[in-house]
Image 1 (cartoon, rainbow, N blue to C red):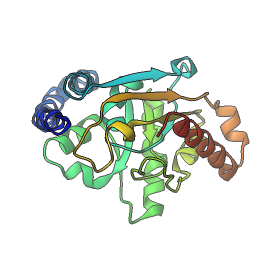
Image 2: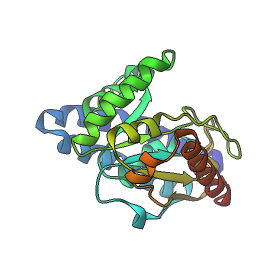
Image 3: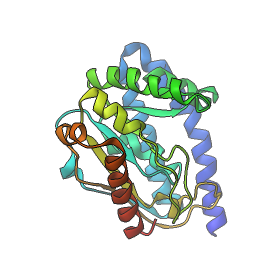
Amino acid sequence: MLIVRSAIFNLCFFALTPLFSLLVVASRPFGFRASWIWARAWSATVRLLLRVCCNIHIRVEGREHFPDRPCVVMGKHQSALETVMMPLLVPPYSWILKRELLYIPLFGWALWSIGTIAIRRGNPREAIRQVIELGRAFLDAGRWVVIFPEGTRSPVGKTGQYQPGGIVLAQKAGVGILPLAHNAGVCWPRKGFIKRPGTVTFRFLPYIPAQEVQARRRNDLLQDIKDQIESETHALGG
């Protein structure tokens, strides 16, 4: 039964994603907000499908930590689920991602149309320049920036190598950092066809204000953020 329910979800997901991507692209001439409505609608539809098809429920904790101005969100990366749900979790944002995602028909076009920071992993110096320049521009325009510092999805219970790009951007742009922990990989494994029933909790951790980000040594702050995210992820079972 688990296989059948997962198959139904996957079929619906891969059928609906190109449709919503097309709607995002088609509405872009009417402004970013028009496209963002469809991005959120896609996330909400997937959330409903997860509940109906797979008995997976989404819970969000820590919204009281949200600042009243754009910031950098640094989150755990375990699954595709956190990227799918992000439009429902934080205000309009730009996502730092690998450039190869832009080449996916329709979906990649949608990512391009709403504005993302697509980096080349093979050129770290160029990548950090893009993160700083484009990230500052998006933050100045009132958009948040989301980054997964591990760079790639880590299996449940494992920790990837955290990169300092999010901290560099926050320091250069003079903004704060909002860490995010979750257990999405438990229900939606990083390379798994099967979607397992349960509750996925997205837990936003205490906000680190811009003054503290500026005052801290980069490596020390990165280690603290890593320890917080990994500790809370482990507490959630992720």
